[in-house]
Image 1: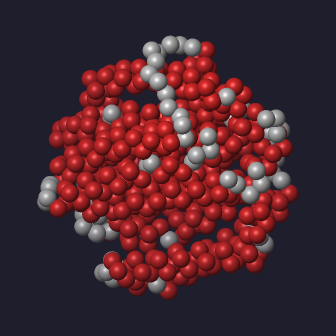
Image 2 (image 1 turned 90 degrees about the vertical axis):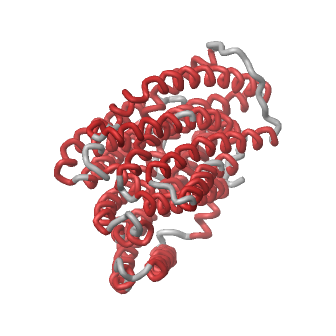
Image 3 (image 1 turned 60 degrees about the vertical axis):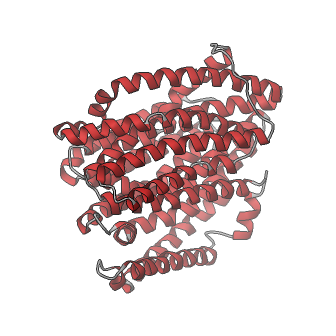
Length: 518
């Protein structure tokens, strides 16, 4: 498969998951709004979700995939299988111990992650209950991440990328059942929580079946601290911080936002929107790029590694920058059409739109982190990105504490976006200083033309939003609002691609030809 095909394969599966995620969030918004049950559910889900991003999908993949790919490339399938069995045994032991501790300490953890809930006993108790139901989801997702890493190292990307859609499918089904039965807010939260756990089991089954279909299965082993497991653990520690910086910053934002009613839900709804392009573009590139760079560097093809990262950066910027522009220019229209109904009020729309517009400014940085970090991880350097991530966290905490009292949710979004740019800048500067990355002539030629295209694109969608202004009024009706948004976004996308071709920001035939290089 070509590099472009792999990006599109993972991106397409991720797009399906994120679109279903929108459906889920729309249903949650209509059923719960930004009320106490929504706050409780999102606060409870954030912790296992954070650990999933940090340990399962973040640190584990960053450490496991290069080691597994190197073993597979250098020692063969049997050695790679033994390594996976050793890792699985250690992983099960660690997860069992972690789950037992967390179940006992749940009230203390909730008091730490949402300190503002302690003044509302009912909200606090519900958060504890939902937390205990959903935390075992982390166990399922950690095992899923390991099997997905095996699939990715074998260059089987699609099933691993498609598995997260099951979370949205199952939770949508749970929400539909709760709404059909006429359940109240707290019971809706409980159904959502059990749906998350069921979805975790379904995802693990899905990737395990895919692994068996390529002839890969593991046998149970007793946990042993072998040299390979020691190396994995050594790499995982720093990677947990480096690979999950965005989630860490979101988590910090939640802690600070818990002191204001509805703030956690507002940030979650804004996060759901900008996570669509981040997931489809940034995560797709990160998933494909890490094993590709690991294999290329193992083979000693250094120039090809630099070329691969340049094409990944070009691909990322070309698709991310227009999405970021749209989030900055028309955030209120997007939020109103997607969420403003039922318990989701116009005031909530305004707050969410302010946060979304600021997240749009940080989106290019979040995607570039996904492009640059594999350049370190593929070389088994997880410590340098960790230091940069720690710097970004300090920037985020300082700004969030300073801005939240003045700007509310928009202050949290500003802190996270600035921290993202700091992290991306440090990663790029260090790769260039080490001689491990340099922007090539093709990308340098296209960047100014891309900027010109974005200016024209921004003016076009702003004008379109004014032309369709009446269709976006709260009293216009969902069908009319949705139609106007589809025309605005779809027409804007066509205009952007046409303008990019005219300005020379993209030559689609050349772009496809370069991405097809192995």
